[in-house]
Length: 197
Image (tube, rainbow, N blue to C red; front, side, top):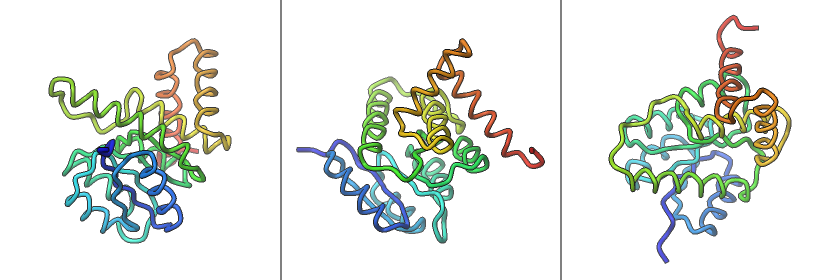
């Protein structure tokens, strides 16, 4: 049976790397893994993955460095796996245009549905007529995933619970889910600005 797609997984924690790699292989994906940013860039260039899952803070090149390379040189979408969700990190994730932001600790059962959803989007985009390259900032489903990551970290929620909370906030404010997510991410970015208190 053909793999559902090729994924680059990068994390300097060998246990996390092994767990995520195994889980994605079990889910039917071909996985290329690296435990540092330098190797990740070489492997991405060599294997041309469809998607990348990146740890943010690593020795040498960070996940942000790898993301910049993937976006600018290969146009490969990526999501971040990180234990950090401080305002500056969230602002940088949004700026880089990540398709999702998953906050550790998490298990593979939380990662696989997010990866599956992203591959559905990749297939839909490939099936459609050629579209202009995505803007670097997160939009639509991307910003919803990012806002859910913020709530997961802030309130120690599972992804499903974070999405429900985001929907409740949107309903209470009388706005759509994407608009509420945009508001939340904008507020976090504002907190990250130098001099903001």
